[in-house]
Amino acid sequence: MKIAVMPGDGIGPEITAQAVKVLEALKTDGLQVEFEHALIGGAAYRATGVPLPESTVALAQASDAVLFGAVGDFSLDTLPRHLRPEQAILGIRKALNLFANFRPAMVYSELADASTLRPEVVAGLDILIVRELTGDIYFGTPRGHRIAEDGPFKGEREAFDTMRYAETEIRRIAHVAFQAARKRGGKLCSVDKANVLETTQFWRDVVTEVGKEYADVELSHMYVDNCAMQLLKNPKQFDVIVTGNLFGDILSDEASMLTGSIGMLPSASLNESNFGLYEPIHGSAPDIAGKDLANPMATVLSAAMMLRYTFGLEEYASRIEKAVQTVLASGPRTGDIWREGKERTGTSGMGDAIVAALARQ
Ligand SMILES: NC(=O)c1ccc[n+]([C@@H]2O[C@H](COP(=O)([O-])OP(=O)(O)OC[C@H]3O[C@@H](n4cnc5c(N)ncnc54)[C@H](O)[C@@H]3O)[C@@H](O)[C@H]2O)c1
Ligand SMILES: CC(C)[C@H](C(=O)O)[C@@H](O)C(=O)O
Ligand SMILES: [Mg+2]
Image (cartoon, rainbow, N blue to C red; front, side, top):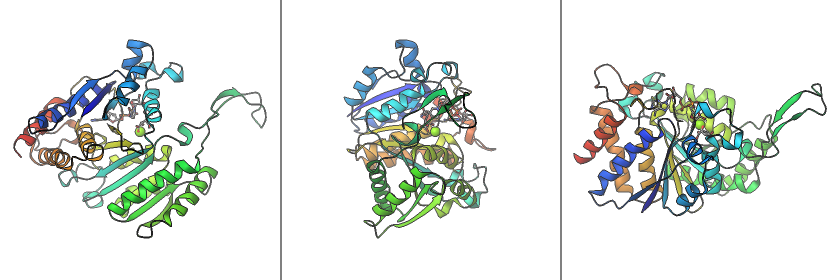
């Protein structure tokens, strides 16, 4: 199996190196993987003049899965939009049709006290956010800048984006979410802003229609502002949440803090044939980049998701997850999840600790 590794910017290279290290360690136990690296994001822009070179997309297409770090470089934020690092992740999701984004938020018992919420609120939490990833206001057209032609601000500069969803886009993500809920706790909450936005009333209508095919799944609907609040008040009321691209982006960062750190949340972005790109949900964290401070667990757990979802290698996937749990229980910790009484380590040390825990299994 060939894995395309795209480290990207900031902490991207440090964290992907740990996931590769963990996968390499499993090779001695029979896992057959090979890696090929490609430039993406700001790193690709600096080397080639574009954030998503054609060769990078071609490598993804010629591989069995993609392991992605993060993109984003504040010093490139003044570039024209199409050259900015973030266009690379948006572009590759679109190019590979990775419309289904799974963002599980699980609270490992060892980390229940690492959340900023009270332990009893988050202990045992296990929710899955299914985020639509290739539509919505992220990709809708028209978008741009212009001089307002009418209205109270006529003659002024204005900017605009378009929120839009086609029925097919909603149907296919709804099916993915219902099927996920069916395999888990049997509850699906669809999150929208149907009280205000036409696009999301349509979202609610289509999800409700699809729900008729899943009588065994309990479907509910919630407005996104309420959901943001409920996630903090009583997150364990949720099983699977399905939502659009923009709301899913925001709610998943919020959910990450229930788990103790954004450095803990992995993700899988899949197309219809289960081809996937696997990445932590966090960004390039320029504030800690290159300092051996980043928590690599989200990326390592993303590699576990890759083994499970794309390759069907459940045994290796759960071995990685167990190794992570062992390190959380008795190993060293990076600063974001460190607490009194625990040994402190860096990005690379955490990778080594996970490898050592695998070897002891
Ligand atoms: N998928 C992606 O590639 C992706 C996702 C989000 C943001 N970004 C980009 O990343 C850049 C930085 O964005 P931001 O600061 O808003 O979000 P961020 O997720 O990079 O960082 C937010 C905060 O969380 C911390 N953090 C993030 N990951 C961590 C980890 N693994 N371990 C410990 N701490 C961690 C950072 O230090 C920072 O304080 C921007 O250019 C943004 O566009 C990219
Ligand atoms: C970097 C950005 C384009 C991206 C998104 O908004 O999808 C990120 O925030 C994420 O969550 O993967
Ligand atoms: Mg995000």
